[in-house]
Length: 298
Image 1 (cartoon, helix red, strand yellow):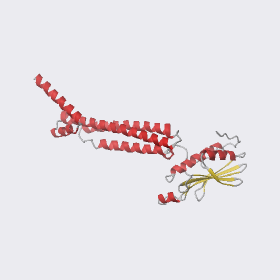
Image 2 (tube, helix red, strand yellow):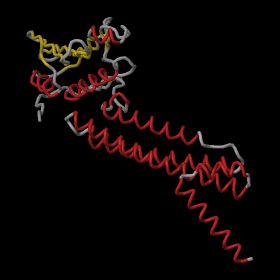
Image 3 (cartoon, one colour):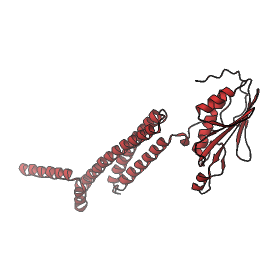
Image 4 (cartoon, one colour):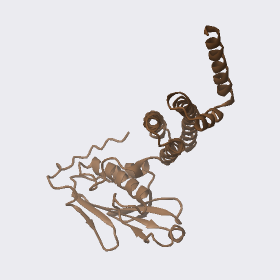
């Protein structure tokens, strides 16, 4: 691990973002003072974050990150002499990507950690530069710290989206079975709320296991994708099992409501017929046994 042995000036007290500038083309820049030659620190950072040097002059070097020019390419321009360093960065958007977005994307994206267009690439570039700035005791890029959904790995985003869709489908499927009847609807809504809370808690636990246990630790993409798929399958299977069980409990509640508490021959018959075959046969046997016991007592 690289340890910078250069002696840097103490960080000046200034407001975050005061030293940052954007030119008309959207290029971000930051200037700060150093006390010694620091090209070794820049080279180490570039190698660690997979930036490649594409141009070099006496006191200036240009790095790029991105193997396909049709998509995003991040550029970092470093001007450095014995006492002064100026960092500049911008993101070039390839023609193919612009065409796919119907030219909603500009040719150059500013290095801003907020917004929607190319937000994942912009925030990744901000995080890369923050690590370089930290080596020189400088403040991070303005508003680039804190939690943001775009900082998540794609496998985590996919898993999160799938879980939200499963929970929404589960809620819609159970909501369709709620009947507006005094006493019954309150019970069914109560049970629905409990089940949604259970699967939400379960989903949150599984998501945290994948995100912090695999996505943020594994290097190989296939491991992240495999973990996301397995966790998603487990969550979907458990949700379907809970949905089936909840539907059966809701039918039993309807049978109890229409057949025992508020006798309604037509609705009682519908509720009984809707029960699973084994459960319906078991109910019929219990009723016949109950009738026999009553006959014996008489």
